Length: 343
Ligand SMILES: [Zn+2]
Image (cartoon, rainbow, N blue to C red; front, side, top):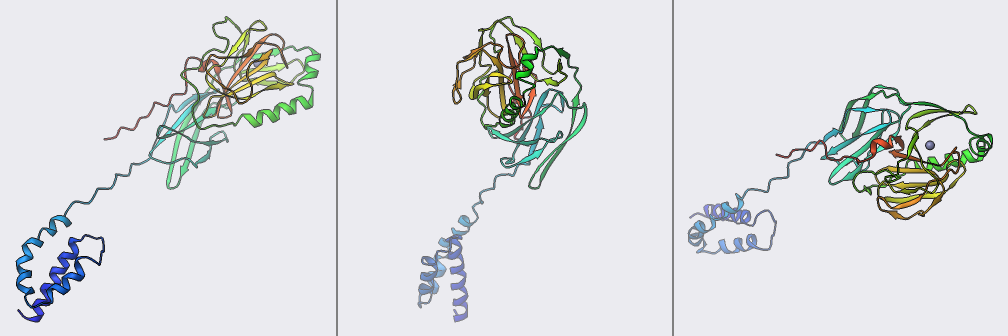
């Protein structure tokens, strides 16, 4: 064998040996040793004899590489593309991280997503004062963008003229400081958001089985006897003073205090931007920071603040907007829609 052939063979063998050590680039093992071995005089025969043994190498190198996980396209579904004034729908997004995504909804409110069991959700409420019609819902994250047409359905709400004694008006609506204190409270809490669902099944009536009379429905456009107007974004449940008031669902008490306009006021955070609001209570059995189970006593019916008789003013807000609390009774936000079928 010529020196040239020897060198070629040696190169070939070392190439095979190098490939046998994989792509690990470990210089200390076969590469250096092989050069020393093949430079000796009897190396040519031993090399050719040992060739078949080395041919196990291609088997090793031909092992299939681990296939990368297939990248799934983001999938967005809506609980419904139609929504009534004073209600809400839910956006569900899968295969995409929306933890930092903030977008403006079609009514101009900032919206964000929360995670639940591997998917991202966003509640999009529609206020009672919204115009019926079609709107465009849009958001984007990185290269991904989503757009859908949403239909806001009209809903007829009641109107009401409410006569309030002048002394009560003077102490509430006509008192600038009282109104401002309420505004500060409302703006602080309406956007309250905690990421985890705290509710436990469907919402229940806050007066239990008491046969209350609904004196003002949700969404009523009310004119007070002093000319001021408001959308009544709650239900008024008339019941005798002292009637027990229960938590409509489990959650954290984030406010339990007196306000001039709403009297004894309790606010429960049910998680994910779902809050329940209780006004005009006679007394309160909970404090800020308490966790309450569904159906547990939180206070008693009263007529404190801007009120003309014993009743519970009970509201539910979703994402900073009041929705019909009666529509929530017996149900809960449903995350189980638009399932992605993995093949
Ligand atoms: Zn009310």
